[in-house]
Image 1 (cartoon, rainbow, N blue to C red):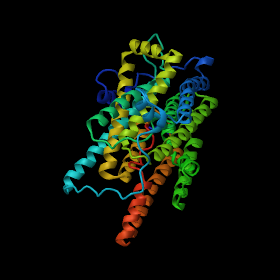
Image 2: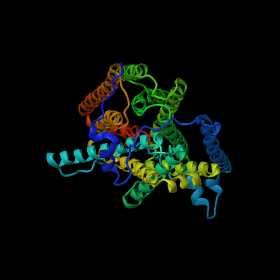
Image 3: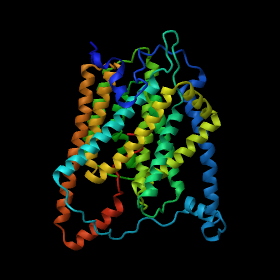
Image 4: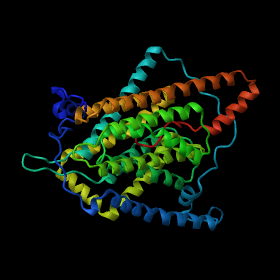
Length: 462
């Protein structure tokens, strides 16, 4: 017997949430969307994926051939002229990786009161929750509901996920650029082309995330994102040759079990066949795999001396170049602009969606800098649980008792993972304090060279 979470009368039509995040257009879009007509072969997700991939390849393959040419010609030693600084920055970088030297002495800050710290924590938690809960609600609204629906017309849906990715990246690039220009940053040394692979995997993961909402429910998508710790560990083994503790494998198995319970207990959504649900799961698998590669590649890039904002700028720069190039080749930019002109509420949703994503990134950096990765992870874990509840209230998704138990197992495993990691850090810190002063300096040097700043930030879309 399927137990659907009831919608209170005050939430009907999602008017209270619309009043909070938008002054004008409602998010719920009224009644349930009508059954869509059978898509043409040009609208099939696999065809669109191949079309996007061909656009990215048309930009990246010539770029890598040019990079190989400059390296083969030893352009760093023989090159001259106006283009030399640009080629050096993009191909060779400005300085080598961070040397194995002692880190600078820690900055001494005045002790802050407990009340002030509490206000900072509340500010970070509220900022993260509002940014990403609003982002999640808008994401589901844009991808699963029609625009311009009336009593006589069914309206039309926006289907170009790549344009939404471009909107998110261009605003995030602007915010990161302003932060880099207005705040003091370390001297950038990484070759710019090294960001391109992280950008490619990040664009593909975001595209798969948006596209999957056409085939699976938002709670299913959130649980898939919560379980990405499993492929992150696999990619860490393959890309970075990392080793993991026994408790990490245990929590990964618990997460897998919880996700399996949810998926097996929840049948397909109304008007969705098993084939479309399978397509959604394939897209979610693509999202998790690409996002896992992004996080591990970013960790490798942090070996160069850079800040998290510089990382955000570099990845978003190449993401914008890839998406705008592919959209221009397909003629999709003009079509998306026409859709925004026909439906002003979609334009408002898309802009607010991008603004929430960019502001969320800044809240991530500030929270980690002030309270550490453990507090940030707890806040984001609670955000995922609230996102599932909010989606069920606003859009009427049904969750069975077994499915709810699976959700509980997933989040219990995530909290157990946070607790175990914190205990491990405390034991490591106690062991370091018990060492001799010479051993401490050497250990701190190795730790500074191995651990990148803000290593808890995974990808751009959380």
